[in-house]
Length: 635
Image (tube, rainbow, N blue to C red; front, side, top):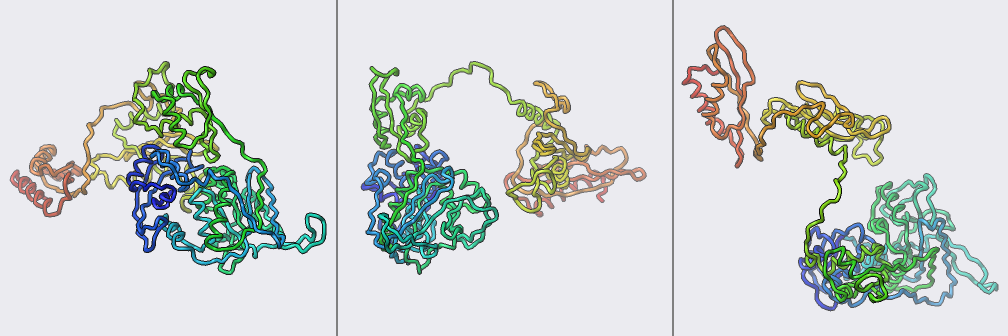
């Protein structure tokens, strides 16, 4: 996630350290940092500075609930650096200041499956003026790589990146509305537009044109937001809004959405449609339904500030409200797990820095030594469920460097051995010692039993049913290169999974220039600690490092008297060639009368530079001169 230092500064009165110091603080206590980028803006950023430092923070999966936002990172820094925040938007209960609903505007919300949407807030704001965003808002979003669209859309995006709650705005004029004709007292009255929002599963084959102007075909596993009166989808729940109710410069009245959608459902929908968005990324990580009200409060306040208008009505559908959680832990257990010697005051200080409300029970009434603490978990911290979660919080905030390193206790029993892993290692060892090289070929094939849903390309859409095809292709590619590799013969093997007859099978396959490709299931091969039934061990060849620089290959052929030993000629060649000769071998021999013709292949290579033809030609001239002195006739 891209995080703006200037944006973070809004949360603190005291100036923050430079981006690299913040990077170190997060790295050693919370998250890895993929990089720091300096952004220069023509106009002032949030803090009034034309320069901004952007941290690329790698949020771990267990903290996607609360840290995919600037508030979340600010809260982490507040605890790590022990710097109080000026304000925490999630510690101020949301409230909505409504104007008099003289037009009797109403918005009904129907949630067909609360398991897929357990909270849905909707608000009606009238009289907005859509236009460019103010400079501070535009540049804040652009600093983290977001394109400014207009003040309404920018406001929803800003709040999402600020506190982590995805939001969406619909053009109210593009939805159907009906009147009711009666007041709540049952008397006749002039009633304004009555809207209906339905959160339902899409119908099989139902289509929607999203805001990216692409048409998507849906199925009944996907959740949509529909105009209940017109019974047509206006958004893909948790993923992207639809063009039918998109905001334009002509928009004057808007309907705002702040909801909580099932993370698994959103992930499957985004993956199936190949439409992953910043909103879907947050819902996929699962966020608290409590956050929806805070998101609605903040986006309304921001829209009224940057686009004007009046808040008319808010409807909050919350079928099953989230319950408060509490987790208990004692100082003695924290120290027992971490191997630390923290005091009660240390633990209490961590809870203070993290703003964890807690109660304390003395050792006299607790079964544990040391004090027992019961932490009332903040609603956004979905990752805190068991005592060990609190232990991790204490350890990382205090600093892992304060925990002494101790030797692990001896293992009481012999660890179990994974039979497949053991067999694969023994087979691999045996084949390598016979001169085989291991390869990893593609698991995708042109034909097979299983079609891959998310195809890499259209050429190989199946999972392979054998290793032989890939091994054969690898052999053909490597044979022309064997002299460059210094090999007399290409011998390959692969240990990999194939999919056939409805199951996955781990296979071992081999191929060489002298043998056809063959394969056998790994579990059919008998493997013992000292031998492998199919492949006997032979002597190992000493490893030699290889050069990073390209080689040059030259051939030389000559006539010799019958009875000449080619090894003597190779010795002469090697002596004259010097250290640049990486490999030399006899590759051809034929007899004609009382003479024998030998041909030698020479591979020249340097470990510190790329050789030139001039250098190699000089060596070849020296070799040729030495051979002529021995009365050999060069061909």
